[in-house]
Image 1: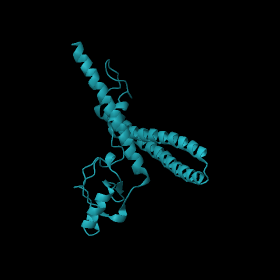
Image 2: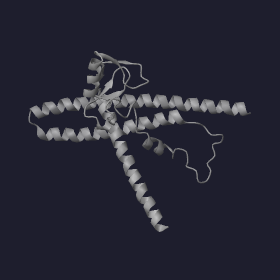
Image 3: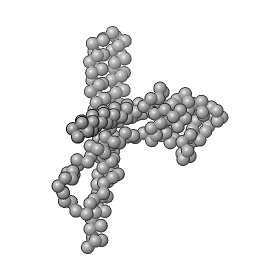
Image 4: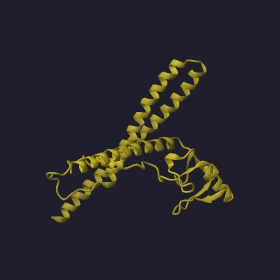
Length: 217
């Protein structure tokens, strides 16, 4: 009986993770289309600006803002899907106990505490700055780690033009032509920046709440 239950649970977990991967792939396809749309908007805006059509450029800017919001929504959705696929573990019984969150209520916490998204490192290994504070962030084509552009290029030059990634456990070799600011990087950093701000705001609210409770005591 126990082995049957374990087998059933394993099958459910496998299906959940497979569904999560499928949904995430579909969502990434939408993100790619949004990025293409951004590129098209930029080209049209440049052309309109050359023709001094300021009003139409402003209208395009509004459309770009709405598109950016859609992009951010898609990235949060992707993070949520990945979190569900990575962390889902079936319990022994699908029974809701009083005082416990209903299924799905935990998801918001997973999303809000996942600030890294698709970024492999949150600080530059050479400058020590958070990636959200880098003036010119670049990412390695080989290992996907992120650095401050000027600092990493100086590091590569100091090693003769080819050097091992400065992140300790990474075996990849870097060269100047293999570090760049790819189209997704700035959006991912901006997403992290937004999530950090929301988390900071939540902490402030919690601090005020705690002070209020202490005052009541």
